[in-house]
Image (cartoon, rainbow, N blue to C red; front, side, top):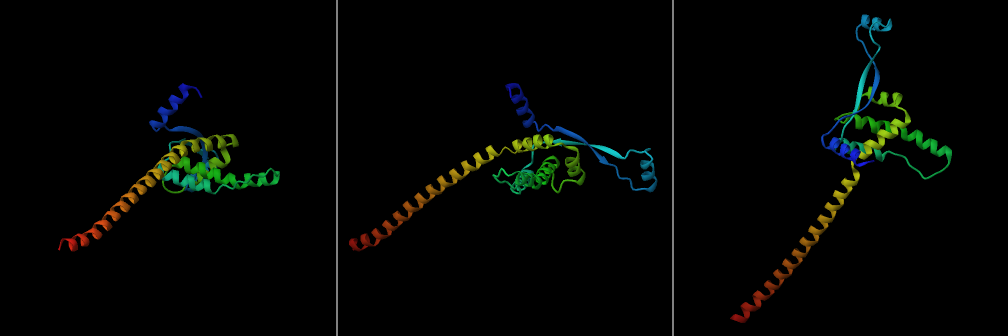
Length: 186
C-alpha cells in the first residue's frame, strides 16, 4: 500500500464510511394470489436487489464475531482428505462470520443475507471480505490495550500489597510499643 491509500483508509475508518460490498438478488415474495400470478408470467419482477455494505463493527458485533472464530476447526495436516473435510466444515463458519459482520445489528442476520453470501459470492470474495472484517476487528490494538491493563492491574496490585504490608507492620510495631511505653512510664 502506498501512503495515499493508507491516508484514505484512515479517513474512511474514522468517518465510519460504509463500503458497498455487492448487490445481491433476493427472491421477491408476494402475498396475494394475483401478484404471484403476475410475477409468474413476468409482469412483476421475481427478484429484487439488495445492497450489502461493510462498516466498522460495533462492540457487540465484535464479541459475536470472536465467538464465531472460536468455532473454526483447524489442523496441521497435509492429507488431502482431511484438508477438504476442514474446508467443508469451516465454510459455513466463514459465511456466518461475514453475515454477522455485514448485518452489524442486534439479532441474527436475515436468511436472504446468508443465502446471498452462500450462492452469489465466489470464494475469492469470501476470502477478501473475511480478511477485511478481521482487519477491521483491530485485534492487535485490543490485545495491546488488554496487555497494558493487565500490567497496570499487576502494578497497582503490587503497590497496594506493599502499602498493606507496610501499614500492617507499622500498626503491629505501634501496638507493641504502646503497652511497653505505658508500663515503663508508670
